Length: 88
Image 1 (cartoon, rainbow, N blue to C red):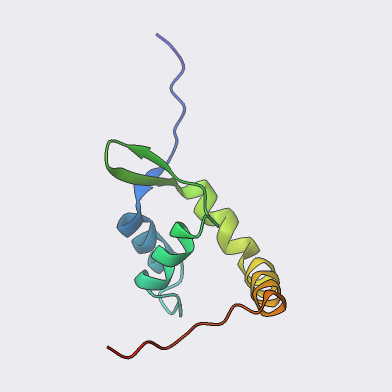
Image 2 (image 1 turned 180 degrees about the vertical axis):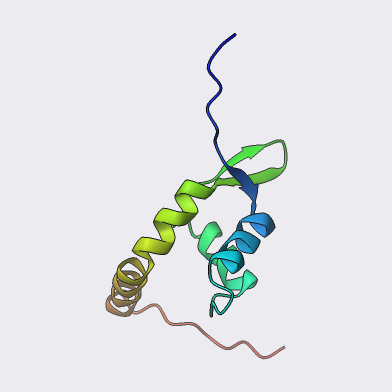
């Protein structure tokens, strides 16, 4: 038989549960985590309609998050992008 590599793959909800297990006091909400994933800060791949993440990539993001988030915010401010409140 071939060599089977153990790659820890999860969907977005499962990956968020993993973060909660690592840090039960995390200030990161599931909604914010979904935004992070959709923005491309954590690599994803799809199988059918499912968006999947490798937990190794989630771990790397958590280690790098402060620097990345600060730089991204600074860049947005420099480009003049602001979040707008839309009243409906």
